Amino acid sequence: MMPGGLTDAKPATPEIQEIANKVKPQLESETNRTYEEFKAVEFKTQVVAGINYYIKVQVGANSYIHIKVFKSLPGEHQTLTLAGYQVGKSKDDELTGF
Image (cartoon, rainbow, N blue to C red; front, side):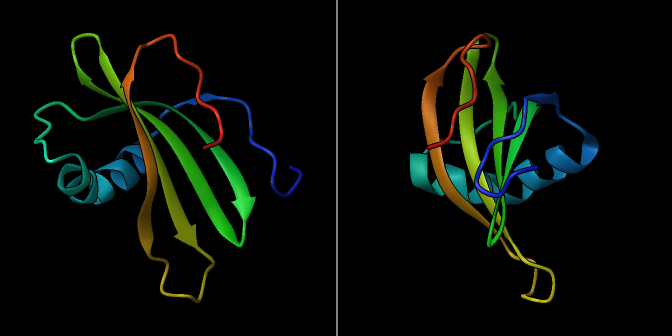
């Protein structure tokens, strides 16, 4: 994988769901909403000074949010930070860098 480039989209794994769950409170604070449904469906990664995870999350029957989560390098406390989000997405919207 080339540093800075996005990988192809892959189906979400339990690890990706766990990452999404850990930043869910940050997202709810940012959007001032509570998400009953919060299911990661696919993701892409980007290697930077750590890893950016771009995750498509289903938050309703036909409602999706794209979240960007930054995971620091090993040895730097491995913190997860919500680095951005895009609301109003559909199932068919492609994950892109933002």
